[in-house]
Length: 185
Image (cartoon, rainbow, N blue to C red; front, side):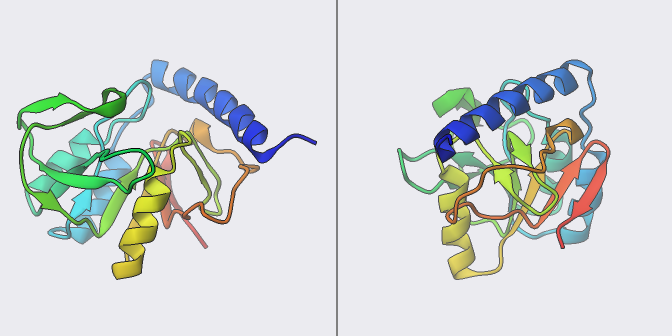
């Protein structure tokens, strides 16, 4: 029997390979994400600046920024929740931890909707991230204050019915892929 950490590492390796193939095939589109966000105009939200082979939410973030505040995550330190700096199309960006670009300056916002990057997802709302726990800690904190929607954004190829999960893993409320929208029961 392998440990949960070993299971997660194996699931990440397989999901990274599937994501790379989908990314190289040019399957990414944020049309379905834009469709969802259009129903929440003006609600503070946070997206992310894609790294490596992550699907790109920026076109949907640009549309949302025309109607309300949009932030991007800033890693404050190991084992800490993320903070979100306000982002606007064309703002000056600098390199942050792990190579993700962040606004050089700007106000901090507290989002009510998070567009969450991931390595793998299940249709039941399970999410496998990179292993740092940043989004789990952040969602737990935000959800302790108010209802906070977590929208997983990924390639359909990242789906995995057998994601190894822990009790601290925060569930997704919805998953959006280039192929469509998956509502979590």
